[in-house]
Image 1 (tube, rainbow, N blue to C red):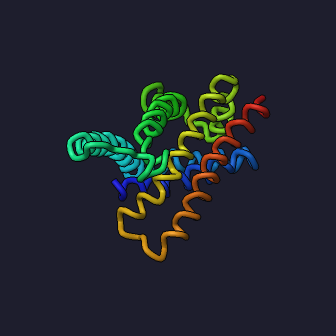
Image 2: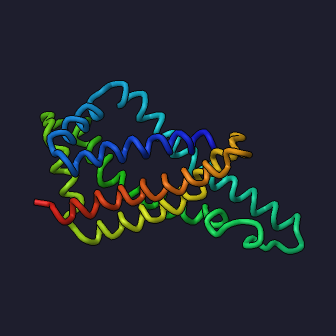
Length: 206
């Protein structure tokens, strides 16, 4: 669970970095996106690993939540979660569930059309299409609102998930204050960065 979380933390930074280029240069965003979309290593090695990590992380999250609930219901006469853990740690399953639904929309908006374009429809490859496709997705205000809400839940999930992943691999003790601080900064920067990109393209779509 921790290994998949750490892998996804790295991916989120990479994904945010690429998407941020769309704010500064349409040409640069098209160039980077075209490279990522046509590079065999990315498409046939890293992408399957990413999909597996996402599925594994969510499945194990639900499995662990079930095991924890089962343990609490049989081992304690009274369980008062607020006395022992934060609100975010007690509700990771709910924020994770919202993120899972949001990922479904995100895949529908970007990954499914990409797979259709490259492997089903068979259209001629256009290395300049990516920026226009990105802006088109944020044309409607209702979609922007959903994306913003999804990124807020992502930030909440990361606030606990970041430090929890490092705790699971034993990186605690004297490193705990630094991990907590970095985790908070990471969570805010990543979620705020994606929110900024969505709103930017909504306000600047052609």
